[in-house]
Image (cartoon, rainbow, N blue to C red; front, side, top):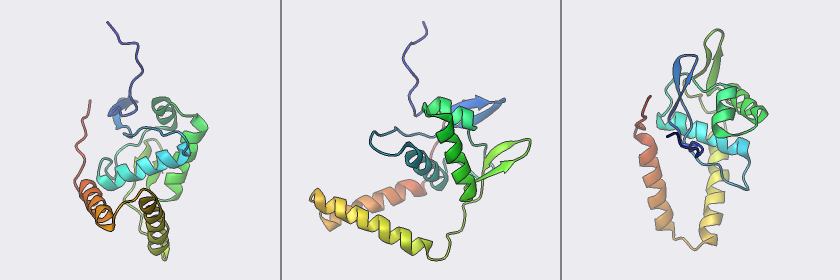
Length: 153
């Protein structure tokens, strides 16, 4: 008997035009921009090795359907990732993952300062100690360095 329950957002693969396309694995969180969440999930998948350069990226239609987001939001995500150099649009093939883009001058320092400031403010707000933050950062760093094991259908 077929289940009437909706598929979870962490589905691993979808077939698009006969090609298995890996989908992003994350849960949308209320109160945060859907666009920002999907962009972050995509960048995390690229950095962790879940998506490899040259691999097909889900189409706008597939992304919208599987994540249950508006097609305009999915289109905006894909266009942003192309503009930032994370994806390439190849005529006749579709959108594929690009080689990770080089950080622009000053971008690394600006991003680091901004993100660290947010992390420190939130950590102090909830009463975390510096050592706890260091341990959490090291653990996350290690998780992202290991290529993600992805099940393909």
